[in-house]
Length: 248
Image (cartoon, rainbow, N blue to C red; front, side, top):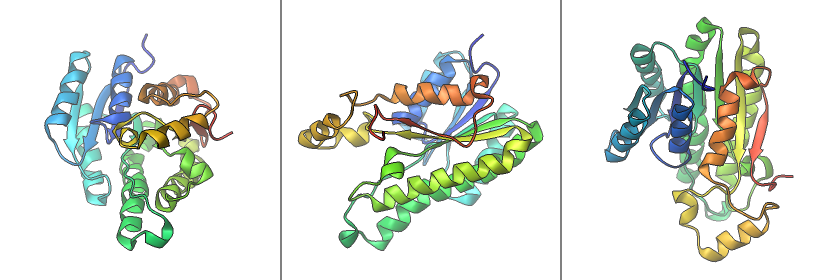
């Protein structure tokens, strides 16, 4: 039997990058996939087609995770279409990097809203569903930057560190109803975002990683499968770094 057979997973920011890798990996393990992004576009439709080709139920939704109302409506739509929600992955996120002296209030607010408030929004939206089921796994996509900090990323680091505190609090609140909440802290993962970095910056980053390579989205997806599956039934409130040893 596949590890996620019979489970329904909702993944925010699921059309591309780490989010898409999560969706494809979960589908390969038998999960039905609901995923969201800001709008339903050609990229979302292509991801939806690839998931359907794997033989699972799948649907993409245009929804703004940073909007409380959108998040409530998204959860209701997924339950209407799929019948339940077993796994929530709060993956939607952005960066607006700059040194604090040059960072605008708008860039601070935008990163905290998209990265952190979205986690509150979606967790709040699915909480009642999971409590009624007396089961569920919430996985929050944090970052090693939220653990260690990083110059030029005070807004991003604050949002990802806040996500860790939120994760531990929700694990304590919902554990008695068999709803688990954990965080993954990826390190230097090859995505569209990291591909935009200059070669010298990429080389410098990789030189600091004990495994001497960047990670792949699939490296993160493998850990997420563990946290979503019954293999981690006694794991909650934890932060698992997927970083090649960066955060040791």
